[in-house]
Image (cartoon, rainbow over all chains, first blue to last red; front, top):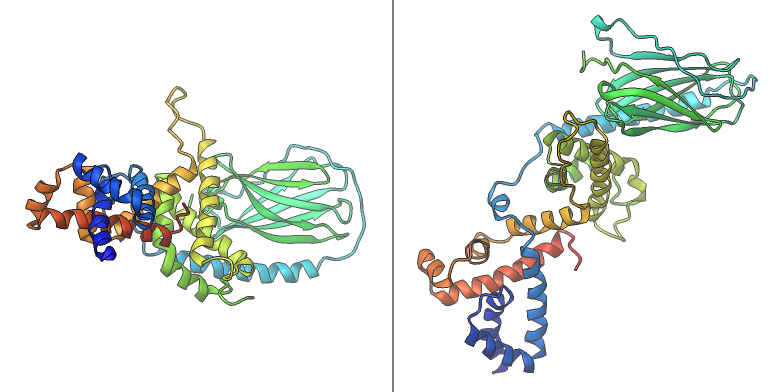
Length: 226
Length: 169
C-alpha cells in the first residue's frame, strides 16, 4: 500500500527538514520525494517551519512563560469603569456650553503655572496658560486616575467653532492625546477630556487651536509622585 | 454594538482572562521591561474597549484584533522610550529589533511552549543542542526511530501552533 509506504517516509521528513538525516537516508528520501507530490508538499511545509526555529532562544523557551501581575486585570477593569463615567460626564458638560461671543487671534505664549502646595501632594493640579492674547483665557485642572489623567479644560475668548486639540507631554517627551473639542461661544466653556498618560509622568499640557500651539508645564505632583 | 465587541466591563474581563498572558509575553519580549509591558497590556485593552464597536468577529478573531492593537501600542511605547534622555551620552544605542521580527521570534517561542513536552524535548535536544539521535534515544529509553518520528510530529505540531497564534507564512 502506497499510503503505508509514505507513512514511513514521512516520519523521516522531520529530521530531513532539520538537516539531520544522514547522507544515504537523505538520498533515498529525496528519490521518493521526486516521485511523490504529497510527501514533497509536506516536506516543503516542514522546511518552512524548520527555518523559523532558528529565531527562537531555547533558554527562553525553557523558562516559565512570564505572567502579568495578578492585579493588572482589576486595574484595567477599573480604568474602563472610570473612563465610562468620565465619558458620560463629558457628554453632559458639552451640552452645557453656553452662548456668548468673543473672537481673537491666537499666538504662541509662555505660560505661568500656578503650582499647588507641593508638600500636600494634592490629588489634582491646576495650571493656567498665562500671557495669552487679549481676551483669551485657558486653564486646566488635571486629575490622576487609574487610566491616566482626566483633564478639565477651560477656554474662553477664541473664535467660536475653533477646534481645540489637547495633549499631554510626558517627562520622556512622548505625546499622548487627551482628545479634542470644538469651542462654541461660551463664557464658561469647560471640556472634560482624558489621556492615557499618568499625571505623575506628565511634564506639560498643550492645546492646539487655530493653527497655534500653547504649551504650559505641569509639575505632575499627583498623589503617586507625592 | 455587534456581538463579540468589547462593549462592557465584563467583556473586557473575559478578553483579559483569555489573552492577557500572551499579550503580556509579547509586550515583555518586545520592550524588555515589566512596567512597560504592563502599561502596554493596559493600553491595549483600553484601546480595544474604546474601539469595541469596530471589532467584527466575521473578519478576524478577537485574539488577532488584540494583537494588531498591542503591536501598535508596543511601537508607540518603544518610540517614547527611545526619546528619553540617556544618562551617559556615549552609551551604545540599545539594539532595536524591528517589531515584525520580535513578533515572529515571540511566535516561534510561544509555539515551542505550546507543543507537547515529548515533542519539545526532542527538538531541544536534537536541533538546539545538536545531540545525535542515538544519544537522545538512549537517554529517553526509546528506540531511535521513535526520536525520529517525534521530531516529525513535533514539527507538525509547531506548524499547527504557529497558525493558532496568528503566524501567516
